Image (cartoon, rainbow, N blue to C red; front, side, top):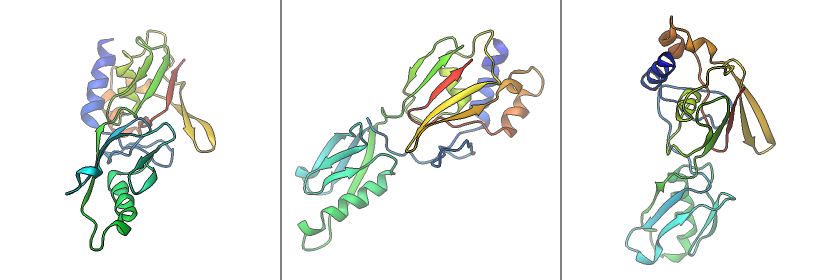
Length: 199
């Protein structure tokens, strides 16, 4: 078990994962900007307009409503994209330029995933940041003694239904060369709504 947790530490230091917006398995060295999820708490602030300052929770369908603008599709968008939508919706309320609009994520509670199967602490997790598969297993207490790390499945929700991504991490848990394996292997990034199954 000491080897397992050592690998988790190496993974966290060697790589920061970025989300794959096309649903494919990916990992990069740079942290990607956070995309809004259903269930997130966001703050919308229109400068100089107290009546247009709102703390909003994004609905399960990925939308929210804003005064004078109406229903806004938020899920999967970056904060600056929501700022542009709000500004556009407010144009007919001002003779001149629309005041600056700022959108920020106050609580990223919509980024959730589950880990089940042969792990020590299965359950649902809300990390508040993007994590890769190794980090997801770490949050779940690590794999149990008889876990098949070469047969991991990630069940992902897509607009066309469920899809399954296969992942093999067995080679990362060997005593020799583990750090090199972590640095050169593309480790899947977990997306909101994913279910990780460890057989």
